[in-house]
Image (tube, rainbow, N blue to C red; front, side, top):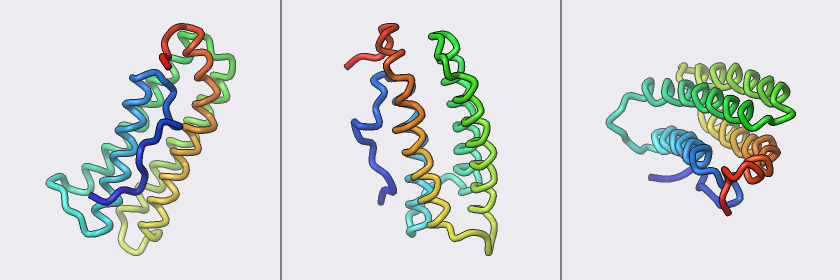
Length: 138
């Protein structure tokens, strides 16, 4: 399977539940990318797209609960960013599945860049808090 993005240690928050969720989200993007490049999967495209939306929302709920438990001071801002991402992800994914909509490659690269940016810039902000609570392990 060709890949749009490959997991890198730089994306790691050193907290395996979050890292595993991020890997699963990137795997879903890679599946969509593979399909768009002639690859096949046994699951209908609509299911994969639906899983991407649902998993995004499930991941954000988990992450927000974690941040609440560890007392992340910027939770309100992080939650607002998540809300914005959820709305845009739904919109972009809908366009991905429609005929004559946005260019599918552009949509995939947009989602990839957005997720990578979210992990590297937004999520990295709470990584020190995970270490201070003994949750993150080097």
